[in-house]
Image (cartoon, rainbow, N blue to C red; front, side, top):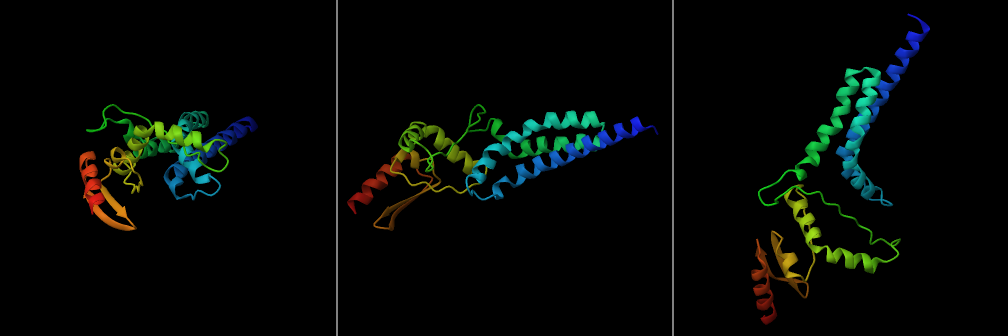
Length: 191
């Protein structure tokens, strides 16, 4: 083996190793991003960035091709498969969702927001999108969501609505409609 062949082989091993490590790291972040606590916004940042890691797949495939490494190519596809399993279903039409849509939620009511009132107004104006996002979090991701609202339309997306008065539950509705919520509010006001 010549010195040139040795350098080429070393370069390919380095590229292959880099592709494998980067692919496994991207896969680990995709799978484990929800385990990172939101300390100094790190958890929120990872929640935002994790779905975008699929954009690394073409670069990983190029690295694997340059290294002529089948194992690196296989590992490069792992983030794509994980992305499809975790977030891909949101792109598929469902029986009650119509055409596929991507939604982005942003939380910037933190202390460093220069105008939290304007942010809150903008969020309220986008109410339907936020409610849809909450419903999808329950239906698609199995998340438990607690919402406190005086808006009967917003409450009607819930599986269950509890009515409180003086810290006590005064009414409880399963699978409510806006009309049943308004009726329960009237009954609670009479009591």
